[in-house]
Length: 480
Image 1 (cartoon, rainbow, N blue to C red):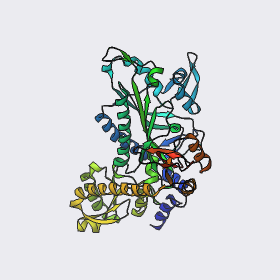
Image 2: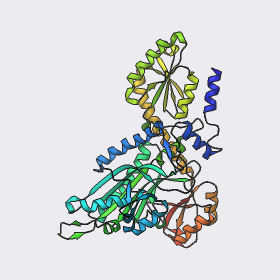
Image 3: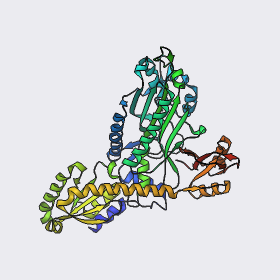
Image 4: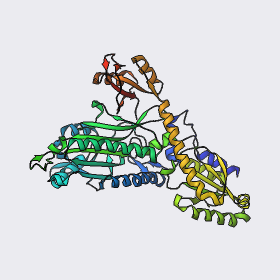
């Protein structure tokens, strides 16, 4: 038994989250069996355990899309070069990241999609004729490629990643803006209700907007190292793409009009946020609602007790099947080894059962986030398991909110701003709105940048960067 436990220890994490956050993160991704490096530089392999979290995100969000009358579709991976040139601000914003393929189609280069605005809006020009065709709400789940030259990191920054991208068309600016903000709210709900992560919703500054957008909104999480992670965006695109791609409709007034458009998306970057926000020195801690397998039953027995214990464990597995409960009945591994493995992989609940437990008609329930052990009557499991999963979700979200709040510092002066950022904080401060002040933050405050501006702007004061009058409040900090 000692040898097995030593083996488990060797396979576990070798650094702590507090002392070496970067290395800790990399080890959790790989040792918790979430993802691995690809032979293609800058790309990743998402393993089944990691992909199951993405599937839970898809399942949750597809239900919301249906409620919002958004339909799923799929558009081509390859985009003609001429499509990018139609909307020059968009083309310029993506030009450094576009991966071009060597083959040319009818004398024109093809790009691997970095995003799908252009190829989708070319189709929309053919589909939209009348105000009766609007609003058009389409989403696709897809992969995209952005030829990152910076240091890549699994889930957080890779050349290829998975995402969903919604693209909607409206008759009026008011309807477009309303739903652009609504999709941001949906992303916030996704993070809080499924992933148990608190976020900062806000509006991007002009220099941080999506290429070609009138307005960009974002939800940003604050990670334990004090850096901000952009976890979702929603863009009010205005009429620029409609004009560039010849999208128009005949209004109720009998006249031709250019529609208003938005786009919005989240990606597998959300998995990185789950790891960083909830993980600990034992490994991953999965939010219960995002876990397909919500509990593992670990039988404890001597050889002559095996059949009796496994029989009872299988009964419990069947009774809790709706929660993805499974029995780890593998031979050749000690219970202690199994405990370590499932803690590393973040399974929310562990159910321990042995001969003494069976005699008492009970099991021992262990929560992954607290490691608290509680004896539970077998007859009560159907009631206790869902209760514990819900309590775990709400307590994880509460801890996430507390962490987010603890990493935000309000400042009034440039000296305070620089000091707070160097102390791994996100700064909230008055800002005059000038790009020159943003550039000063990047150049002189350890590479920090504008994260977003709170949706509710209150009060006025002096810009913390230049001391001129300011009516805007903004968050500044280091970002992933």
